[in-house]
Image 1 (cartoon, one colour):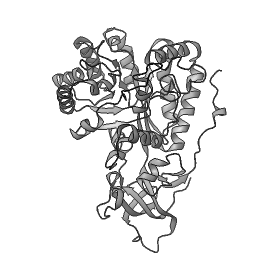
Image 2 (cartoon, helix red, strand yellow):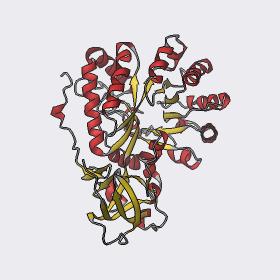
Image 3 (cartoon, rainbow, N blue to C red):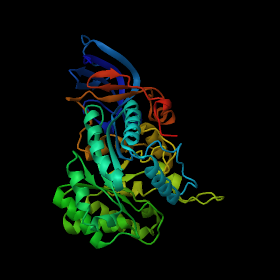
Image 4 (cartoon, helix red, strand yellow):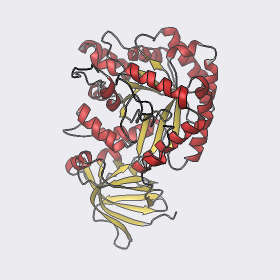
Length: 427
């Protein structure tokens, strides 16, 4: 694949996603730019209409919006695309757990898991994701097999999607001496992280100490499923933040879901948000999945959205991100690893608009930075980005499934989205 050299004229970049100080912001806080591409590099970003005339044109962007590659920081590749063979019988959280357990026992051979993970990554790749972190069920025979399988996948996808993985077990598992084997598998994996499911009814100080101690011993960051419920009388999130502070933990900590934070009284909410800020924890909200599962009462209309306090956390200086979470499995039967679709839904669910402001960072540069990558569109950076069909933020959010072009390493590519008939799920 040869690199393009020349100019992409007349495109728009959200100001929060680019360091182009010479370009003034216009409506929607968009920068109207010409992009100079050379040797796989974004050589320069100039005000629209000022690129040198002698530079050959790659294309006229006609005012279309350019985005950095998406970073999907919370997914479940090993569960994805099992809905058709093992749906959730009642749409509840407990129903999802039971269905996944049944499917894992019946179908999760290495070939089955690899095929579904490969299909998932082809979807993500086709939609413009360049960075993806997955939680891996680390239990039983699957737990033994999935980490070597993931490392093979990581190597095969290098240069297309940078992959990271997290061990997914219940918090109490880390009191078991066998948890050392989990830490070893994680530490042997580039970008591997320790993870756990932590709720109000299983969080204890000694269990957190065991988890933090292993992370410190093996030099691992933490990525945790936290408070995925509506419990109103306290949060595990606060206890995790306090443990991070008391231990002076030096690694990164991401806490996903954190739904019950919004169920606390307002005074407690402020205290917990402050502790999270002081601990340096990053928050990943997964509104699509939580909206599907939380407050489900058959025959009654759901009232609670299951969304954490994204606005209050962000206002306090806590990094807030969004991600795909589950895709076509018993926890969420929809989705396609399309982060623009995810972001559009999150804007609606969590009211991230009027104005959209810096929220585009939450699915692009911010999670990428937490994964160790600088994807800000900048002079001298990589020529890796997405050219959408939208000219305004409203157009982009109203038609997220519209066509988009991917530039990777200075070359426009068309990876396409795989057809469903290319996926065999053992039905």
